[in-house]
Length: 264
Image (cartoon, rainbow, N blue to C red; front, side):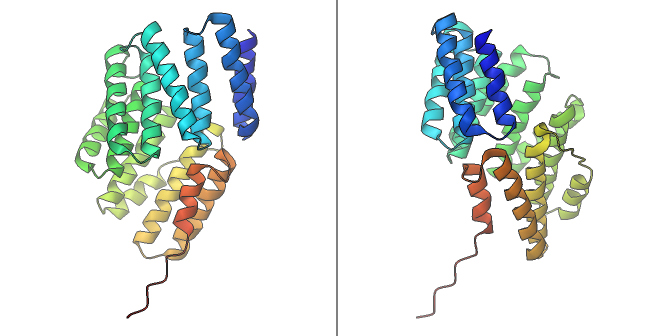
């Protein structure tokens, strides 16, 4: 029970944006889980994964990778390599590889995670939908638009995405239209995405703002593009901190273009 209470405190700190304070609480939870349940248990694997997620957000990618790998090794031994629990960690390792600029590794991890979940869980399970959309996001940003479009079309036809995952699928569909040059279709899709201010939807606000900024830039409206990216940066800084990798990526979008070199 004490370990569960620590997890709850750590998650509450995360929701409040107090990530630096959540870190030692997650570490305490990991130590307590090992003491209570033994070092090779689902509880310890889960604690490693939770701590890795936080370290990932904070940009401490080497440490995050170590904890994800520790979690994966335990899940392989305890739950098996075909279990949904194992797939969770594979998915998170894929997201880490994507952020580290290794799309090939990320794609392999996302595909393996999705295959496990599709085999073990109902098609309407949220984790199946989330895993598929993670793969779609990567394919879009790797230029594999045809496969991304096919996956989105199949997802839409199934009608199983609900709640935030349905909204996320719509945002990815808008991004697909944008990348294909269908700007009006992308804007129409974005106009149909209604978001609230709950913590779970704040990342979706950031995605929408950045996509609106890209659309404005594509139409030649630099002022609107900059304003959208500034709003996205403020939201990202509030969510993960101003020095997080995600916030720094948006800051880089706002950096002025370098002056052209003078002619010789």
